[in-house]
Length: 284
Image (cartoon, rainbow, N blue to C red; front, side, top):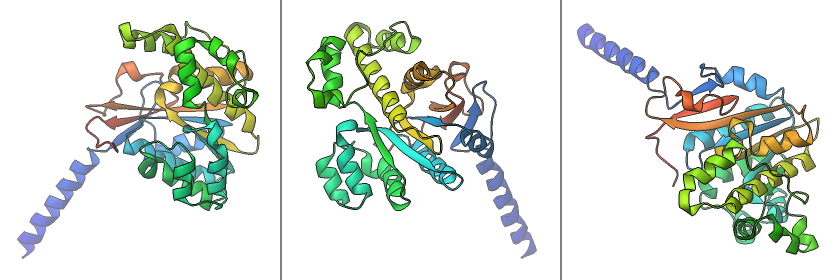
């Protein structure tokens, strides 16, 4: 009997050691050094804005988005915002947060992403249950499409109402920013300068939305695809154009086959980098 118990104990210990060496993710800082969740959280709480860059179908991204919101919300006032909601959908989002409409009503009145129920509803419901504001920050997709086809000049045709859904015109734009250059390179023959301008319109509008709602007493946590703030470009570039001394922390999500060390190509992508196993099951 003692021998059997000993075998079981050894097996459990071995399993525990194996499990400790197979984490689903590891956190790194900008220089590729591993960092604890607690240390990251302590730094995030000192900021005015946290730009959380996700991989849209990655469950680790979405779990940490919710965890960080909860942990920050326990320590100071927070405000949430997201790329996944467009500015012209703010009213139905507000009505849902105020419990004036149901989840079904929100689904029918707002243009929700296909993975809303699994990936973003938990954040929105957390906001509703805890009386936390949630800002729809993104430009309506039809307006981004207009710029993708006709450049910034297409925005001159907008109605007064539509102009309230975009950043102030004219849109500042630096075509030489590496992120926009990389975007065009990746698209090859399918890319055009106007496609990078459409991306810039999204970045500028999300930054504008954050600035509109920024309150010194609240930490604004914003969720978006990682490429919207990698290497301190995109949304952060526009925020810094408005106020160079703004306290901002960035988070990026990357995936690797081996997460035990961060590949140099990911160094500097953000202040904190969530490195996830590349075979992690996606939410869609």
